[in-house]
Structure formats: structure tokens, C-alpha cells
Image (cartoon, rainbow, N blue to C red; front, side, top):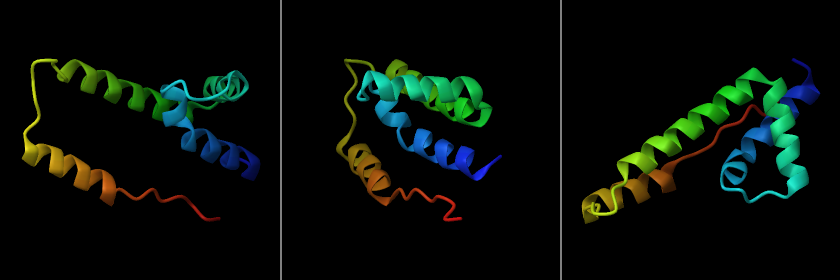
Length: 88
């Protein structure tokens, strides 16, 4: 994989959440779609994220309410999450 392809993958993966949430311009979303069609590792990442979102959506029942303890644990996990990228 060339350096340009790795850079493109990094850009795509950084924008994956915005893509899932339909927060990108049409041009940006088209670029992501084209890249995903050509790059199996990025497509795998997209599909994992999509499956996780579906699982969460199915698990979230409108009648269920998370306990205060669970909310704190989730918020703590989010604030402690660090994204590491290859600096090369």
C-alpha cells in the first residue's frame, strides 16, 4: 500500500463517524463511498461500526433507562478513549 493510500485511509477512517451520521457534504460522502468500494480494510472498519450501531440501536429499548452508575461508566470510557495513528 502506497503512502498516499495510507494517508487516504487515515482520512476516511477519521471521517467514518461523520459519514455514518450523514454529517458530510455530498462530495465528501461520495469520496468516502468510492474509497470504501476500493479498500477492503476500510470497508471492514465501516461494516464493524455499522454493525455496532445496529446492535446498540436494537439494544436500546425506549422503556429501558440506564442506571446512573452505567451512565458514569460510559462517560468515563468515552473520555478515556485515545485514538492512536501511525505517525510514519
